Length: 359
Ligand SMILES: Cc1ncc(COP(=O)(O)O)c(C=O)c1O
Image (cartoon, helix red, strand yellow):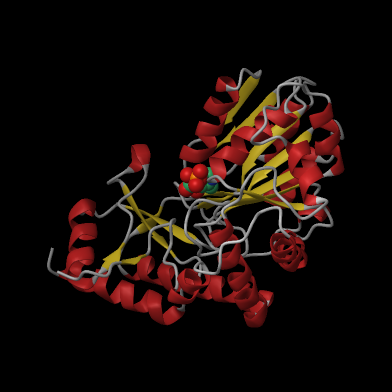
């Protein structure tokens, strides 16, 4: 039995020793000039990754904090929740729990959101916000963000809230150009940082909408984030170790080069896809809409997924995911996001092939 398990689950992903070491920087006061210098130092890199001129905020929470905060801060009349998997489905539930008027635009898991269906819903005039998950991690599906944003931009009063939790930094997502009003991500996916921190940016229209709502709360109040960020601070005491790690990761990202990084994700993803095809498996997500950061594999061979994952872990020290929610066992997932390379993926896939041959 191997003791060190390398993660190939779609979050949290493997965190490098370098990143972990970066977290052990000295503790500093969050109102100190040292902290402001730290936040200031990562700011241009974050704006570049978000492809925005808007402020980028650091939230000491997992992504759900910001996802809930976005609903509380930005939905006045009603929200259309685009739903195509476990996380996007849950956002509808969260919208209702926040006491908002919410409507479900549901498609089958594995299918993409249809831009014309979004158009038809927004044309009813019932909505002033839309939520979309760009990369549905539960099904390995990537929604047609450009086409959907073209639709949403036709409705200037509609705030476009986009979760790029498991796609951010693995491919170009031009927030300003697409007209995204709030874009958010988490630390434990392609950024390959430990869980516990989220990043998000918001548009002028989002700040304007927030001023019209009185029940924004405090911890995720957009206007508090904006006011504090003007002075390179956060509303409450942030997770400073994560910010050190983020600084280290941004240095790595820009040293590799964004295009190289994006290409690496395409290549590692292709290696997994080739393995799926070569081993008689199918993809869960529809052709043309498959994620470049993870692969959700349909268990059409009726293998014992739990046994496969257990044996790959115990005999080879690699952790894959045995499927999420209602498709657990009917699918399994392999992540290629973060620091992975063609070599690391090939090692995993060789282990999986060897295990399958003796099952
Ligand atoms: C696309 C997507 N959105 C949101 C979340 C929720 O993130 P967290 O559990 O870190 O709050 C996840 C988690 O896997 C996710 O994959």
